[in-house]
Length: 319
Image (cartoon, one colour):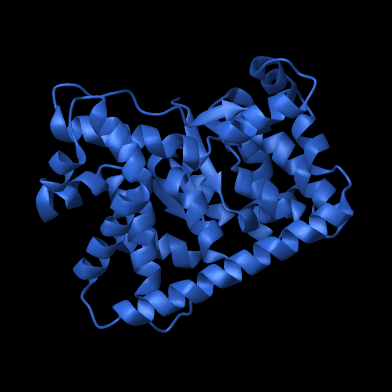
């Protein structure tokens, strides 16, 4: 059987934990942990974590709750993590530039999954850890982080003062982002969806111009060549950058649900999905995002199974 990667959002990790510990959120969840573990142990399925999962867990103020969920993270993820978006995006942009200007050569896709919680931390942060620790090289530190129980130990370390401060900062940041998104979509509301999409692409072009310029320089091209692609060419280009394609379409979908306010947690949800959708085989997410993935066509484009309940995974587990 082909190895499949399955993404669970934070709530579904919690439901998995409840079912594992005998307090199932729904009666039909009771059999899911055993089925998953069977295929995980056989190497047929991986359930990688994102660093955002760990950050969300660490916000919990109840040590026992953190400990129980940390054990489930350790047991079911086997220490597999998704690469940080900041490391993946430059590679995606480089690939899209090559595909746009030199279709005869396609660079390899980025490495998305790796062992140990350090794999999910941006390269710049990992390098800082080397400078600040007694470990002399990244390979040694990475091996330590991938050891059994290393993830559990990291997630259950007591540091309540830092935890409270981090939780407060994240809440403030998410609330501020939600307010800014509400203001922006109010400005965009009179305009058609295609105009919204162009505005997103213009924002990406400005925000990631350094990565674009670097990729263009590697093949003797310039930003003038990039701008010369025109509206149609630029639209096609950004649709070839998988994580930003997902970011764009989910953001547009969210912003155009006029009866629903932007939620502070939306940014975390989209942050998970930008890499889960293009590179996993299945996702289990809340109904709003499951519907978004279907209605935007992202599920079909990236050939990913979309579920909104743990029990629905049973169809995948027996196939």
